[in-house]
Length: 94
Figure 1: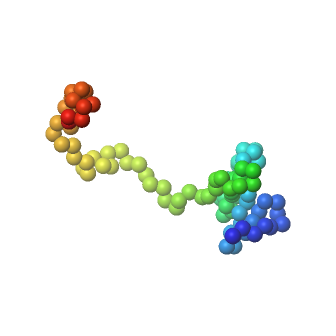
Figure 2: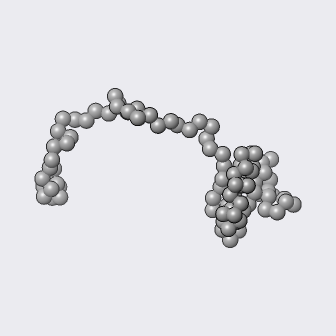
């Protein structure tokens, strides 16, 4: 539940500061909003007073992409790259 606070668009929700910002203001203040999120504040982007998005910190650990990570886990059956007859495929005969 949002409770209006005295500080221009800020609310308190379960003891967490939440800042409501219009899309237009967010465009102009993005670096400031990112600093607020880094400081633990949640930022809600609004359109005509209705929430449409939220800025929050990233997950604690972002998954690293490893080239070849699935190499031993995927097996392609023989013939997977054999060309097919397009007419038979479109007729559902394959």
